[in-house]
Image (cartoon, rainbow, N blue to C red; front, side):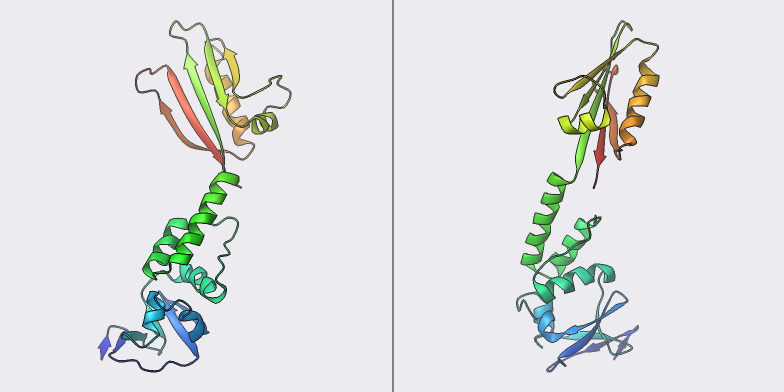
Length: 211
């Protein structure tokens, strides 16, 4: 029976040892052993013969999910190890796929990698600009790890974080822009900026560097 471009098989009893599977338009070739590595997972149940399986018009088994994300799912099934590129950012999407395929060990591996990268790789700087209400002096305070501030503001004589700059009224805006530019020159990007809800003379910026 045809349903669009997908043909429903009411009963599946046997599968070949090598399987072509179409996931969201991306076709993968893998072994039955890999797909059933975790018998209680959705794939383990699907390819055990205990439920019906759809095929596309070319005879590939079909799953209507995120095709590119499936490569990481499949590689985990093959090796029980999760290897992601250093610049991988799509943790939420991959977690959603792991949840759909019901692979708890993959979900746990994702959580561990995400936590490790957030702690080790992401660096955060917070700037607070406090304009004196009488307009006489403006203080710009830069919060961050000491070694990061030393990297960015070489030549400044300070012992520990935070680093405080003092400007007169005329210098405040241009000097703040210059310092923000210096920080972004070192690979940081503005994550968010905001004004203090109770005191509009105070502004804050949060900058992050991902490596």
